[in-house]
Length: 314
Ligand SMILES: C[S@@+](CC[C@H](N)C(=O)[O-])C[C@H]1O[C@@H](n2cnc3c(N)ncnc32)[C@H](O)[C@@H]1O
Image (cartoon, rainbow, N blue to C red; front, side, top):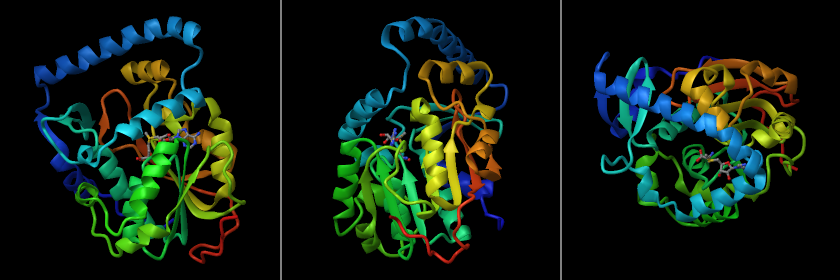
């Protein structure tokens, strides 16, 4: 695979507006925050077992769907903008502690996706768990010649994405959020937003050159095997995953949190069982102190010739 420019200097520039406070090494206030979070997740882990007996396993697809119908129903584009008055999360990156708004990290991921598409030059891209379509809207405006599609479990997410795609322009706040220049905003009208589940993708084998997930597999632990098999089946050349792989979340409060929430527990090496060969791993991205999300790019065993774009969705 060609080298992709994901230098931390450029990522730091993309992230900077969302960071409202930085802590020097050894700052006792930061150490206190981390210790408090550690205690809190430990406490929640101890009670999680009881809750599970009463409520059943977490991340059941019907509950995930219900919760995202609510989340996307109340979402407003204003949330995408940096604002010290909004909730601040304790984040770690490059050994530094900081307080930052939630949408700074997705903005960094979106920038990485742009760089990956620039380098890998797929003719077609699918996002699995596309939510309100924010990534696809941004990427389609940047790469008007690429065929983009999304599949999303919640009806609200899907409908809201389609409504934006039908407009003549991107909402002002979304345009400000996007960390690169769009080339042709009209291209958003051609994005195909599908409703459905990752457990059964309505596309043929090798239907897309590149398939990506951004913090969506984390919601699919109950259907992990089916979702990964389906992603591998429809990916002709590459998969790109911004997810909290177990490799980075298997100790301390990160492990406690994963156990409480029932989030994604696959290891990077597990992807091989689905015919996905990891070729680029970047753990060094900003992340909340209790959950490390990194990037894994894998080569798919699919049948499309690189860059030829001969793979059509069924
Ligand atoms: C944290 S959100 C991320 C949304 C989007 N990837 C982004 O970056 O803005 C996770 C999304 O995955 C979707 N999802 C969860 N389970 C799914 C499934 N089985 N099939 C398709 N989408 C699913 C949720 O409805 C939600 O919109």
